[in-house]
Length: 248
Image 1 (tube, rainbow, N blue to C red):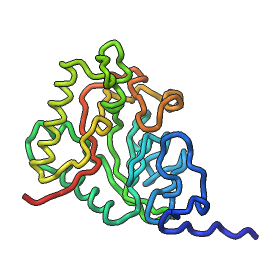
Image 2: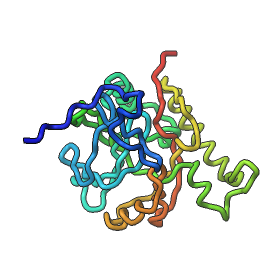
Image 3: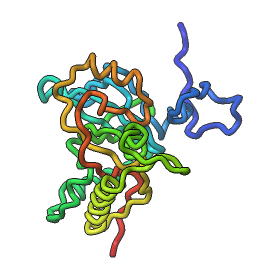
Image 4: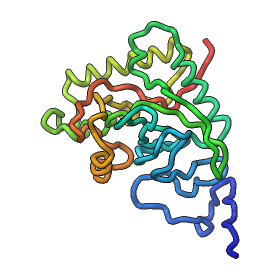
């Protein structure tokens, strides 16, 4: 009888000869961090919370991975983004609490629509611990990525491409409104950058799973270009990474 594989160590070995995997050449999270206290191993086709069927990987961060999922309880072609936090309790609890505060905020502020609100949340048991999962609307490309995809509108400079002035003003205004909404709720964003500003899309309801699979197969995992499904990108929102609660 074959013995089960040993439990990975709680921390990544510094000596690479003790690593379990070869790190992929494509941008991705550290594979060695699939261990207790860190990432949850996700299976395509698997269902979380008896509801969300995993279809594709959308991206990753230092403390989470994000997945495109089909909401099986909301009708055909209903898609969401499921963010699975690492099982590190202090980080997980902090982010979950902040999202709850912002989602339940009664403050009448125009910047609230420029912030990603949680649609659902739940805990999921896994081999490396218990994981907090946050469910969001599916977003489009980041501001950093989209500027490279509109060469007919962007401006070429020595430092790379830039948005035309009118578009840059619109993006900046909406981002500042979102930041002010955070501030008014005593929350600070610690990682404001183009890569954390996402454009919304009108809807993916007209796109079936086969189409999404074809689109995603030719996309970089960090910035899936859902605008390729012919859904127009519209309002950018500030992503929710690196946000911290503070007292005035």
